[in-house]
Length: 108
Length: 112
Image (cartoon, rainbow over all chains, first blue to last red; front, top):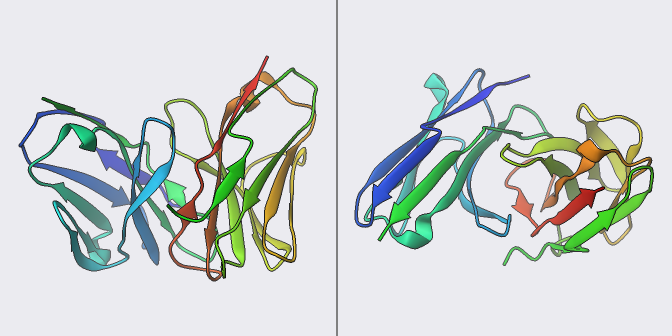
């Protein structure tokens, strides 16, 4: 099965800073999502982005499908951005494989 | 709000017992999958149901079983609970056999 590698594993930022999270896939995927897991455990959808670029407020994401990676950009970070960010992908019609996550802490 | 509801939110069981977790699907979503998330790890795929049939399974033993009902709600059953079954169990739905997943808030199971 595919392997999903996320970097960095941990990130500490001052409020207002920008950051880039990366996700590498060992094989091509036809579904790809970014999630933010809140302290209560819920996975919140950020982007469904098997290819191309999308933006939503301070967040944006880019997937380069031919090179099997995706990037999540967070600009002007806020303390509420703290939590764990996961990327996940699938090659077929069922299971998504998740990375191990990037743990982000934004300091006031 | 994803429209996916899970119950119960928290529960405690003892080793050897059985547990049933429930998931109500968002309207129009005919595919449901279940994931197990151990502390500090990413979610791991358990299985998926599409139109009431299991159509994919991860590396979990047969004591993990499921059902999907005609209204597309779903159950996850775990028999003979082990300590390592302690985890957050997440249900996800989507409007077709592929595409974007929408997760519920999860059921946190503790096995003592």
